[in-house]
Each structure stands twice: as structure tokens, then as C-alpha cells.
Length: 75
Image (cartoon, rainbow, N blue to C red):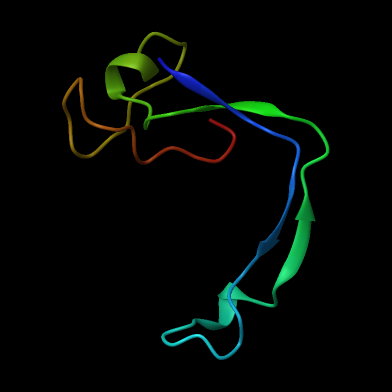
């Protein structure tokens, strides 16, 4: 797996109220402060990567190089 470092930074999250095609759950806009840097996977976790851990693969679309889906936030 390949990871990228996300720096500590502040950014505006959400879309402006007048944006074309905006959905109700895309606002309100707010400033988000990431106070510490962290590492994030550059690519989606594949079923092959996911299977290396103690998890059950419940993906509907099977294949070792396909992304994992049908998992919960805590998984």
C-alpha cells in the first residue's frame, strides 16, 4: 500500500449556498482545522489488502484488485 502525508492545515469544507446542483447536506460551509498531520492511503483498499487482516470480505463485486465495499465505518 502507498500512503501520502496530509499536512496540518485549515480549509473551507462544504459548498456555498448558491452553488449549482448543491444538495442540502453539503452545507453550511465551515472552516476545518487539521491540527496534526496524518497519513492517508493514496488508493482505495483492495480486497486483497483487506483480506490480509482479520476481517470478513462482504464485498458484492468480488475480485482481488477491486476496492473493498460493504464495510462499516469502524471496519
